[in-house]
Image: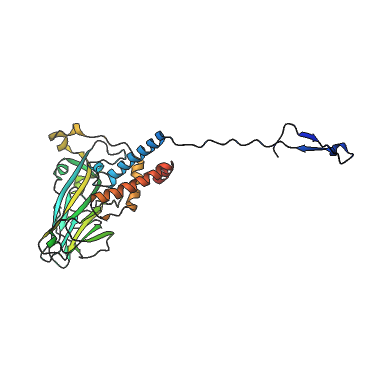
Length: 336
């Protein structure tokens, strides 16, 4: 019973006892009603700010997770590191041409230096002794002292005429490919693989994944210039065709790599590039955390082109970031 200042006494009209104290009863007052707390209602301004925050961090996450996104073009990793550096995008096409057996086997390395290799006609796929140098990478090779990979991927597009579009195309993720190595054709038990029938307009997309501790570090260009991917912690792409017409270009692989690099002496002296170096982006731990989680939610190989990939990555990134922002400590815990 709650405390009261003074008990209210009310005398009964018909006493039932000669004891005068029996003719009175004690009645406690009613407890005061609890005041209702006003419901917290988010204003339109609050909702607008929250939506803007989700959009901002989603764009930042997509810029380092979807190499084909507009925000990824020459993007820098938003970790607050790297010092003064240059963002750059390497982008070009590789024609995928079958051999005399109607097969093709291309390994495309996600490195700004080397390159890709195609296996000649044989029962097994033997990579060449040297990689073909990536096109459009001359600016990086000439001016870079150290290179950091931000994002990269490959889109394979079937372009052969309908009358010649027979066969199957497979896109796979492969780690640390090695030159002069024999690979088995038609093996689909790689880390991530998708296949499709060849028809005009059909597309498949590969997104490179980091798989080592140095993936987000600046690597000396001389280390990468060794014809090997042993020092490169990013997955490469395998494009394989089977059952196609012989000696025919069945499609094209569009290679995209977004990198940032520091300037070497040639860039600073001969090319006078010191004045156009860019400061690192401010640290965005939410975008960095979302990227790490996107690797487990978005497959490395997806059936469809860049538009489908963009929608998948953006949707998953927005959902992850909304959850992180709803729980103020969730993204902090994700960093630990």
